[in-house]
Image (cartoon, rainbow, N blue to C red; front, top):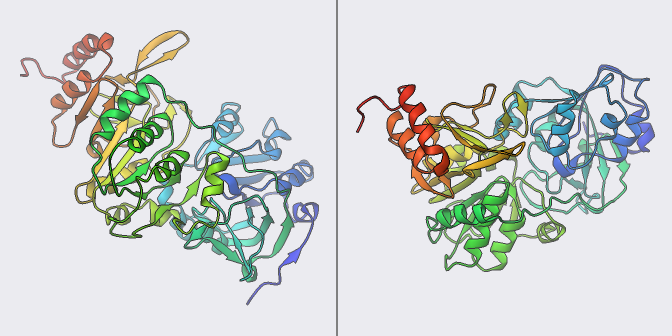
Length: 439
């Protein structure tokens, strides 16, 4: 039976919350602000609240009002910098996921949500509240929530695609949002290392390739180089729509003409970047937002030919295990879609997966190698060695597919920083990764 949606104040919406409830704030740019502020004022009256979220782009009022974590337990499926700081304080917690599987988690494994509250664009002529640039698993969340509250925001871009909105008949309450501008993610400044890695990857991208671009400086640098190249008819099937993809489109490199599915369209599930990105996606029929179980599942990704998946990692051992989401026991981001795109790209006809990293990093003034004999204790493996294909640093590119453990170790040592190669080789022999007398 259709619901009779009511317009209420944020204070009235927050008054619906009772101690012990499970709330869901949606994800990324769709997280609510006016409801969040109103709920923060009720902490103490209500307690033991559990809130699920993903990639917070602004400070959350409920966490700022509860600095000791006495009333709110915050669970995130992917950390932003803000979520990471709250995790360091012990008041935010990670929920391990493959991002592309989350709709199924809601439908099969996650108990019904007491209240789901999230931002949408204002209601359209057909009675739909558009999810904007945070499509992800919103349809599954609406299906599983006992109470659905939408916070209308005029600044939220209206996006095209599938499963992009909730009809008023599915909504219980409507709030007036504050319509503040969308949070922006500063575009990374390309370093010399980024550009060196990008040159190696860009040389492998052929006409008609279908790109997945991960977050960070190196994937962004690949877009910059491709924009200046002669490559033609690129396609996009990615998780996150980035500024770099917009730049690549405006340079005339993206047509999507050679794609096997969603031909002529740039496909994604969410976006985060500068205001010009949000202006670009607003009611743009060239850009399609789909649920994350369409964009990220390998069996869908592989349906396009010559998929090129480009992702970052922070540490890799000599067998090819990539730790992309933690620093030891400190969680820093999330599994996201990396391993799913690695698999989908490999399964694509002529597809290639690139995992890139700078050869070194500085820690407390000391230079350290990102290629290591063994991962830091507590580090989480995001992409296993059996899935690893191309690995790229500023010192070269190697392909680990079909390689033995000893061959992998030798290849990875060859693209480590020269200052660390001797130690890595000695440790590899010491631990029998490279057997004695191995050619």
